Structures are given as structure tokens and as C-alpha cells.
Length: 635
Image (cartoon, rainbow, N blue to C red; front, side, top):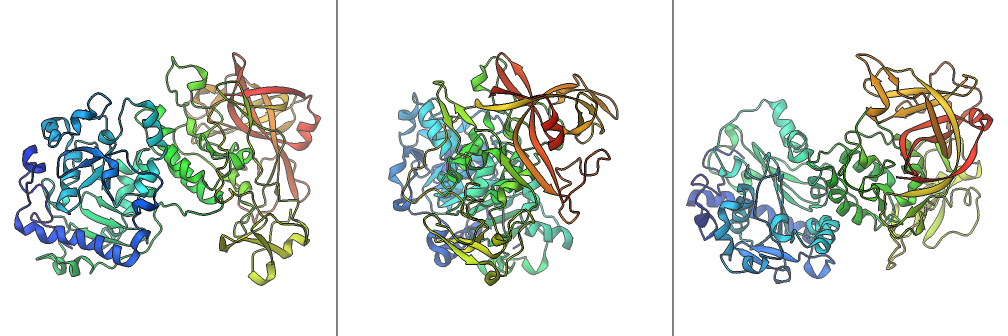
């Protein structure tokens, strides 16, 4: 639908005075049709999908403590509302009014927000006005609905923020702004408007809203990651379009372009003339079982997000982790699923980076852990996590990983709590054609489901059978995996950045054999200068940078073995994304499989070890090295 200067306006009078905007100001009559279209989108969604696209209060475990009443212009108790809207936007460090324990009583007085108009950014003002204009009364906005100085309640709401968005009636997404001062955008008459013509190729990209979102500040920020995933339906205010997205994957867009067949008075029929498309946006499928493959994709997406403050990387992920933790036994520990912890430690970085530091004055236990990918900004390579996806029948990999150590968390009370990384506990138990299955699991004949063959590492009996779980009739598993039992509150692994294990240590030396860009891989040599493996260096501070190459500051490295691994030496399996030594001329390549140890290069600081790199050492080289068993605390 074409949007000209007269289209769908909230601020038809160009950023009106605050009291006019919230105290009952109305758009001029010609805008009513456009607002009705937005309401029609919601009505149509309600009729077709019901509670699939918005939650009912009685079915929601999490509900806002505070909400903004846009009619009374004040903060109210969240329990007053049976439904509410949410706002997703880029804060950008803009000064804004915040709710605190000292002013919340005053902010509950009717029309109290009128008095603070100058301290509310444009995006927040316009979101409140839009809420009122489409006939809704309540909206949740973080700055005004979380008491910023109430640490306990603030942490709780941040941990459950994903659910706050999932339970909302509708999310307004200010996707075109650089900060909270930008407003909702120039579409819908929210600011200076312009007409723009698109070539067909450009327009086809606009129709799939992922293109402008990816290029927007909103699409690059860490805090908006979970908001985009969990909002069941949302209106995206883009630069030239207004996009409605709902849980079934349908979108209708108001296109701000000069298309002749869509010009003139705007109607619901015209808005639907742009055929709805079905497509998977960055959403999460809520499953009864832990989907590591999907989690890997989402973690990779999150790793690329940007943060104003390094300390925000965990809070901005916590709401997502809380929801995911309901299907992953043990929960999510600094971005690593506890159930797959041994595999999750095997992340790599495609480029050198500098570790995120919360504060140079903070203690060790307040810093982000060196062993987690969340501590390093930019893209992350999670290709080795495929080893943990082997339980999925539709996923094929020749990589097999087996843990060597038992990891424990060290709590703030110095208590050691085991990390139950036992996704593979049924792998060997059910290689046979018979045996007792865990509750809810059943065995099916693999030929009957026309499944793929397993990698050659599996026994011949296992080729014939696969498994299903009673909660998901469609998914086929190679073997059962531990699940969170229904109606059972699973023990979540305590959050701590200190983990400990007892591991074998050996010393090697290394030489850089690859240019500095885009990443740095070093070969490992034993005491006899025999090639033994490779390391993937992440940290910038470990190398001396040259214009086209680099050298390691200290070529002697202390390695600990954390798991064993093997991979088929078969070109049909694409392993180059992580197996950089595949074509190394000195790598042993006899036999059908290549066997190695996954190792961490560590460095000690005041009795705490820190990860410097992940690597692999050829099995024969590690077995021949002089080793000793040590206790390691990794921070």
C-alpha cells in the first residue's frame, strides 16, 4: 500500500507539544483509515490464530510488575491489565526518565507523565501515542516499567524479559532509529515524509523485512535479539515500510513507494494486495527436547550483536537463556548449554579479538569467563558443536567427541557443583537392537522411515533403528537424550565464571603458519620438533602483528586435554570450516579416521587459568608426550 505524506499519521502536526500528544490529541480525519488498517491486521490475526499469536493473562506465568497507562498518562500496577503492548527500540545512551523506588509513587499519579514530557525520548512518546490511537491502553517500556535501582526485581525481570515480550498482545519495533530520540520513523506520518521509487529487485528485498532489519542499528544491537525472537507478533516501523509480522510467519507491509496500482485512498483490501509471505524469521521453535542445532544458529546470530557496555552481553541473553533452559537440562551457563558442555567448550573464532572486560577494577568472579564465546566480540565459529547434534536423525556428521574430564562449577560460596554434560549417555547403550528405553521413548525401524545412513563410526545394528519421543511424533532421533521431565523443576546449573576439572597437561611449542587475516592458526610441535597439531588463536595480545603475518610472543604453550575426537578422512564430509589441519602436509592421514585430543592452551594468573586458544593434538603425539595430571580452575 502506498504511503504518501498523508498516510497513517500519529504526529500529523509534526512532533506536537507533549500535552497534546498524550492528553487526548487525535489524528486528523484522513488518517483514520490507515489506523483502521493496523487494527484490521490485528483483528484478522486474532480470528485466524487466536492465542497462537498473543498470550492470555490466565495462561501466563510471567506478567509485568508495572505498565504505562497511555490514557491516564501514568505508571500502574501490571495486574490491572488483561493485555499490554511492548516496545522494542535502540536506547543509544539517550537521557530519559527512569522509574526508581524513589519516584514510582509519584509516577502512579494520573497525568504524572505529562510533567516529564521533556525527559521522555521521542520513540517512547510516539509508542505511547500509537498505543492509544489503535485503541489499546497499556504498554510495557523497560525504562519506565523496571525500577532501575531495585537490583533484585530488575534482575528477575531481565531474566524473564523474553517471556514479557512473548506474553504481550503486540510489540512495536522502532527498527529505523539510531537511538531513543529518533522516533518510530518517517512512515505513518511520524516525521518528515518522502516518496521513494524502488526498482523491482529492491522492492523484492523490501518485501522480506530481514533485509532492512539486518542493515539497521536495531538489528545489530544485543538487547533487541531476544525481543525479535520472542515477540509473537509485531509492527516494524522501518524507514520506508511498516511491516506486520505474526507468529504464523505472515507479513503485510505498507510500502512507502510510488506504485501506481496502490496509490489513492488506502483500504484493507489494498494493504492485503501484497500477498502475505511465509518464511522463517529468527524465531525459536518451542520444543519439549533440547535442539542444539537450532541453538547453535541462534548463538551464532547473537555473537555478532553489538553492545554499548561489555557487561550487558549476559543480561541481554539471559531472557533467551531462561526460556531455552526449560528444555535443556541444567540450563545455559554463559551461553554454553550445560547438557552439551563438553562439546560447547569447543568454540572457535574466525578472527583475532580482544576479550570483553567488564571493568578493570572488578574482581575475577565478576569478569566474563575466558572459556565462553560470549566473552569475545564478533563472529564465532561453532562448527565443532555439530558433534553434539549427532542425536538428530536428520543431521549427518562424521565428527565424534568423547569427554575426558568432569567439569564442576565453583560457586561464590566455594562449593563445587557438577555440570551434568551427559547428552551422550545413551549413545552407546542403544547401539544394540534391544534394551530398556527411558520413559517416553520408543524404537522404530530405520528403513521404515527412509532415513539417512549414520556415519561410519556407528555399529551395524544401530543402522537399523531410530527413536521417537511421545511429545514429538515428527522428529526422529539417532538415540534418546536426557530430557527435562514434565512438571519437574530441573536443577539449573549455578551461574559462575569459575569452572574446575582434573586434566592431563603437556607442554608443546608452536609456530605461526598462516597470515594474520582473517584468523590465526599455529602449528604445534613436540620437544623433538615433530608436527603434532594446530591451535586456533583468538586473543590479539598473544601475537606480534605485522603487515601480512604474525609471530607468537611466547612459542612455548601449556596444554590440557579436555576431550578426544575423531573424524572420517573422507572428502564427502565438509570439515574445512574447523579442521584447518586437514591438508597440512605433515598431518598423519593413514586409516579411515583421524584421531586427536581437543586441548586448551591455558595461562595462569594468581592461581586461576585462562583460556588462550583451542586446539587439536594428534592422538599419537599426545600419547607420546610427557604428561601430568593437574587440578585446573578456569576463569
